[in-house]
Amino acid sequence: MHHFQYRAGELHAEDVPVSRIAKAVGTPFYCYSTATLERHYGVFADALRGLDAHIHYAMKANSNVAVVRTLANLGAGADVVSEGELRLALAAGVPARRIVFSGVGKTRSELAFAIKAGILQINVESEPELFALNEVAGELGLVAPVSIRVNPDVDAGTHDKITTGRKENKFGIEWTRAHAVFRRAVDLPHVEALGVAVHIGSQLTDLQPFRDAFLRVRELVTMLRADGLGVRHVDVGGGLGVPYGDGSGPPPLPSEYAAVIRETLGGLGCRILLEPGRLIVGNAGILVTRVVYVKEGATRTFVIVDAAMNDLVRPAMYGALHDIAPVRESDVDARRHPVDVVGPVCESGDTFAQQISLPPVVGGDLLAIGTAGAYGAVMSSDYNARPLVPEVLVKGDAFAIVRRRPTYEEMLAREILPDWFDHD
Ligand code: LLP
Image 1 (cartoon, rainbow, N blue to C red):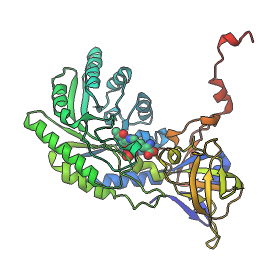
Image 2 (image 1 turned 90 degrees about the horizontal axis):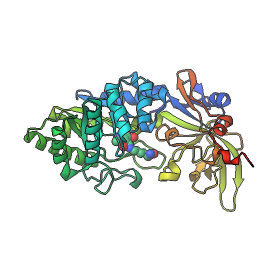
Image 3 (image 1 turned 90 degrees about the vertical axis):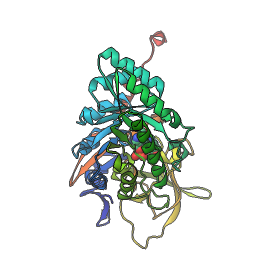
């Protein structure tokens, strides 16, 4: 369920016609819906009721400060993967005590920043990182709160580029070493071992891999406790999928996912930390783009739009198919045609969809690319010297630019000519 619906033939974001925003900010732009963010967060939180469960929204999915503030106001914590995300989380008003820091390559300076900020937990992914963290905390005269991320060697059955829980993936501490590393953490003077963390991948559409991974975690917690080692936190990561336009069946419901957590980890008496990203923000965003030209190729019709792979890379990077629909609703009996929707970048990979059926469109029409709230703006770049697109947040009948489009002057101002060109 999301709040991008047609009213009187016009796509609206909540109570605002999308075309009105386009007029005000220009295209392309990302548009997020507050009501959808609140609804997704609410559904997820409700599903977990009765568990000692804490939601740490995965900022990597969408780190816009206004989006994160919306979630923080509902009680969300944050899962961050860099000092930059940690700073954004704090700027959005997420209390440090609700922030978890994940990632395989946190640098010493990032670790120091996180320890000084007083965050809830640092998920350590290797022994060298554990020792570095102990040293850094020691130098600061502080103790770092730690969970050990394990690699459960479970195949999440998702796209290869976003699967993280197989033993050949770079993530987590090998399942068989986890026990020894946790014991090591307990013995180190400047870390406090709180628990165990796991994250097996993203866009999962099947619950079985979660069940397998969580059972392994339960087994580990049980063994650690049998050895007299206290375990208070279990962090289950994120990963629950959302529906895209690829026709794959609907992903499991949050309530079904929560049932797996209850069944596997509910009885441990641990605080359960969750790091959902896509599920919360995916459907809460669209990318709005304008048709530049419609070109009849030798064998196909190309709808050339003003958004490109640098604005939304998921189709090019993962072969993802996002729904695409005209902002002005077409007549029910309009004849649909198979078209390719492509961007202006000089790569054939700059294609949003191939041979999808669209009603007739002409240059100047607006299109909405759906489910673009997660891993959209955050993965954008200014490749081809295209300015980053603005982000807009809607709330009821109000909308606001929450990250503006940089000007060409700002882009040029970043460039520096070394002084050896002075004599040109
Ligand atoms: N926790 C950790 C440690 C993660 O690595 C991730 C995602 C999450 C939580 C959130 O996962 P989610 O609930 O969003 O599935 N750019 C890719 C997705 C990369 C996900 C990386 N890790 C995409 O566009 O599909």
